[in-house]
Amino acid sequence: MIKEELYAQIGRYASCHAEAHISLTQFRADERAARRYTGILESICEGVLSFEFRLHGLSVFSQGTVYVTPDPASREHFLALCEQIRQGSGRFRNHSFSTVPHLTIARQLDERQVDTAFRLLQPRTIETRFCCTGIALRTFDAPKGQYTIVHRIPFGNHQKALMPKQAALW
Image (cartoon, rainbow, N blue to C red):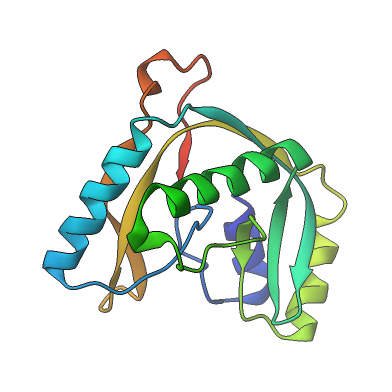
């Protein structure tokens, strides 16, 4: 809904059709390496517990990305998950993980578009929460110009989650 309203105000922008997500990391892999990474992540995720992720507040990165920020507890859960994955396998030990978890609304906006986005969104109380029950692997779909989920990996206790499953980190 927010993305559609922003689209109506400023027109097409990078990520206007992207599905909501919070990125852990990005890597390139051929099919064989992707299967290896998937196996490693499945093994690590068996020991991860689902957690509540709360988002509130609006911010912007210097390159024109408008995003919703997590609360401090959610940020710490996210960073702990990144560290658990990093330590869970030698393959990810030196891998770069996100250090600023966020939910992107729009990216690559110019200064005027950022101002418009804040005028439209700032008066609202942007607050949401979801139970993070797993991660998803995505691949870039060049014809669509978007990432597409190719595999979901549930956390070990995903069946016991008390909150509705509304999203996953990927």
